[in-house]
Length: 502
Image (cartoon, rainbow, N blue to C red; front, side, top):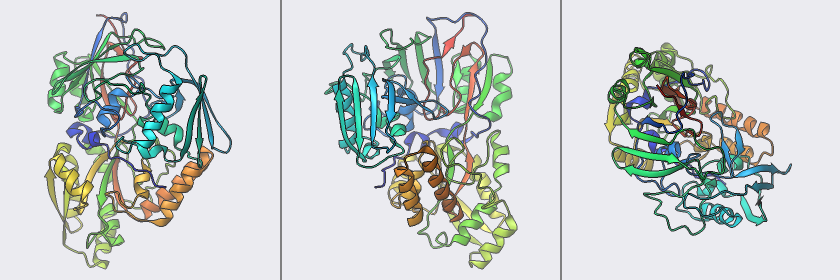
């Protein structure tokens, strides 16, 4: 059974700053701060896109996961920035060798923000809602679950068939534990179990968290975190230089010298699962020809893209380095303009015109590169920069496009390539079968191997071009420690962030 994957709307609306990030090293540590940590400190963090509402159950988009997961809402398990599954509301968990039974030991003494005790009944109810409520995001992630039961503090999940993604999904939205039959207005408020309380939302400006002093685990190291929503990169730089923010996420690596000039900030590069994807509509007259798709891929100078962005690494397939199944596929379609011209000639597609439909918040860097590179091999590329609602309707829903560029931030989202109804329009039975085999695998190694095989086929089919692997580019105040640096566009656990006096 195919999973329903939701496009991260926040990724689409991540403005120019996110479109200008790449990926270099791993989760580099943030700079060591001098001075004494201040437990009463307030930390201001610049983010790019503000969520439309706060309902983690039904509102898609990485803007919610980025701030609410781990900090306010939790599941039985969580994930580290390096994508390792770790205990959260469960103190321990096990998986049977056949992959059909998962057991979790629920922690004692956990309370929700409103003071109510977390019970096993809350867990069973929450996971059942995630599975059965079609209007909840990621509902299909639990499609292979047969039953969810509780006996004392032991939660048992039994499966109809193995699902190698189950623990991963439980570490995300599909595993968020809520209070049974809670009456909170989820669109404007929250009632979670995490280290922070959501205390205010000034729409169009900021969201504020305060330390949860009743938190079951180690208490947050600062009293307050304020997320300031500043879409414009230059405005964010100005805010940093005037001391209005302590951390700038979604930063443009090309501005490193400017923000580091006075010694108050250090730019840190971390890995991410952001994939700058050039989608190609296989239903189009020209793009249904594999030779044309290959010509487009081999016309793009990926190394020059990384140089223009100021950071990053190339990506020649649908799986980034942080995800299972990654393989270096650079040999599949290397930069070769002369080969591109030859392929276009063979396809009878010399001197054609194509249109790139792109969300206008991504800026001009990537479109300009694509226009130049494709023009050099005889393809005239017209850029149709549109507002996000237009992109969503025309491209994502109606598949009315030729080429489109999107920064996909979601981790482990290969399932999109196994879904012929997704806007990519890619339909390959072998890939779909391999993906199902990866889900049914009972070991991580076998699951990753099936994904690796499938990803290579997708790349060899020239289903799209992966222009670059985006990064977490974060400018961190030199008096700040504990700021995550890997995959912060998707989510960031701020329990360890600290701010020094002076």
